[in-house]
Image 1: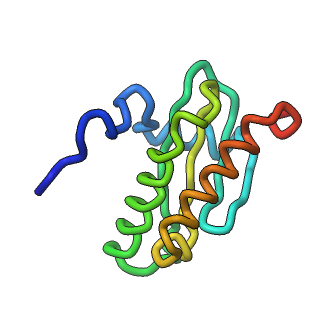
Image 2: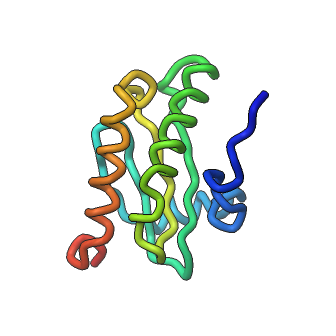
Amino acid sequence: MAKAPAALALPRGERLRRAADFQTVFQRGSRHERGSFVVLWRPAEGRRVGFAVSRQLRGAARRNRARRRIREAYRQVREQMAPDIEMVVVARPSAATRPFPELIDDMRRLAEALGRPGSRA
């Protein structure tokens, strides 16, 4: 199985890995909705991101596909994201079937929205 090149992979320090980190963002974070996903975010020292998929999306293979697609869309626009937030991107069922360019477009709009001073108050 081929692995992602190191240049494209998310650095370990940029990922939310512990359940406690996810819970902190879920409980204390603000919410921002896009067509294919919901993002919960909060200000932090550095940029960190986690990905989740609701069990409403039946079947582990479909959930994994949705997670991979939103993670790749994030990677495409990662440099445009604010450098000082923690966020959890929760895929909606449409993330598994929506055309990939639309996912990237949703992620770009998210980066713009979180980069605006008024949206982060």
